[in-house]
Length: 148
Image (cartoon, rainbow, N blue to C red; front, side, top):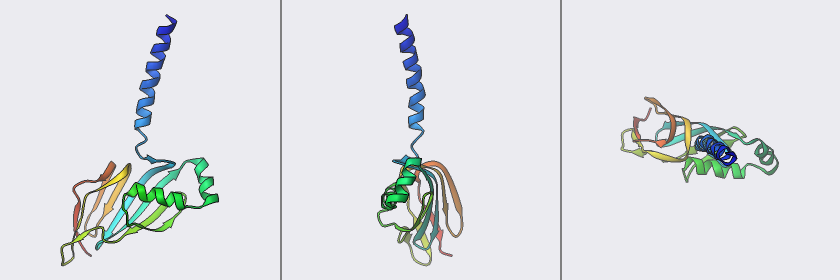
């Protein structure tokens, strides 16, 4: 009887732990992504990332510098040629040149893109429209737009 109770407790524990581990798809190492905003103008994208850092890591980043944080954020975004304009403990701003294809006469296509984490809140803004996505791993289908 005692073994039966232990087995039932282990099953309940496993059922409780599995959803909790699946719920952390927005986490990359010590970084938890909260929101990503992409603003498109011409072929350039300005990307603002909001995130939180695990508490012990915040102190290490303050003491040792932000290079590892920068590298991890670039990995999360999955844009090889992104340039970091500013970075702090909860927000970063990056710029990616030539992220969209130009078809001439101010017509652009921002292709679909895959991130390396699930982004809880993603907003893509063009001169004409703003699209919002929830809990996505990327930008599906791409977006066409005109330069302002």
